[in-house]
Image 1 (tube, protein in one colour):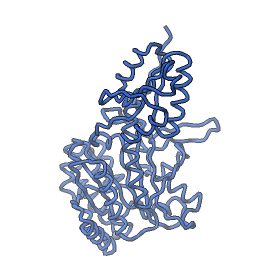
Image 2: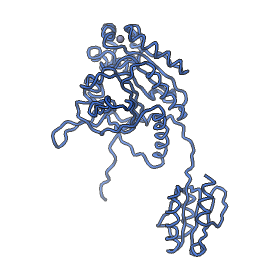
Image 3: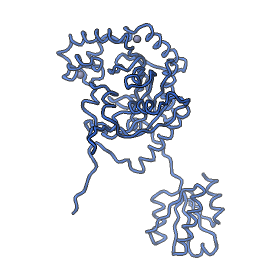
Image 4: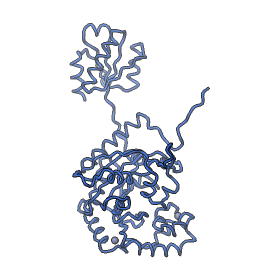
Length: 416
Ligand SMILES: [Zn+2]
Ligand SMILES: [Zn+2]
């Protein structure tokens, strides 16, 4: 026996029946993005390692523990993208997109890669929707983005969601907050987990991200960043909340929503669902007004969100949608050719057809059609070929009628 080669741990095949569900969700997502003026952008799966080191911050967990980094044959260090924003920012700079008339509104869906501990619902190759808008300072766009995310989830019938918002301030006001936070965290150092003990020195904001219960409890007693905002950030946050109300969106201010990376500024938000249990975030995003500059690009601000598609799929209710398709059953060589011509004709008219070439008897072909839950069966034998009329069976009603090619098309069109 030859040795079988299994899939890599932490990866997952999306088989056809599931892929259909993905396609349905992706279509809704695409349409929502396009409705709001976003256009798709596709960048390479791998980039220079520095891009992500810079993009996610060298102290972040993603960079420290989870990047798929390798040397290519030319000796360059490359990384499979662990997140999308740095790639978009790089593409804008590379192509000087900010000098072109098109709006800087982008969306993307595709695989990301993180060397994470494999666990239920978490994969090392996972998929994300990423939505970004650049060069819009007005908090109205922040609110519009949240409203779009909300609309998108409504379209997908995702229930029991809650919108959480916060502001992380800016370069002017955050340092004094971090100073306060660090001194408070220092007092609690002994009760924090090992990871968080390190964060006290490197980046105390990241303590808020810790999943350990005791750390979360301690973090609740920490000072709130919204009490430290400068007038500009405070006004921006106030207006953002005002626009959310204008859109009729309910939200809650959540102090733990901080981003521990320097170029994150002002707005952060998350939409959570109680249906997800402990890992309750469906999507998260925020503003990063200083990112483009950090990457050597023009001084333009940005805001966006990312949504894990596996997680989204787990809360999208599955509609029992039956595929409409015709199964062509034939008997004999003449009928086979006539069947091939018929399916060619019907497919070109937009009718999904299936004709299989391995089942010989009519009976076994009928039983295949049944098993596959075909909507129609078209039976073609030698007699039918002579007459130019074929037996069309409606599988739902059991009704069977003799029809010409044109009539078959008309009947199917009328029914669908
Ligand atoms: Zn500020
Ligand atoms: Zn911790």
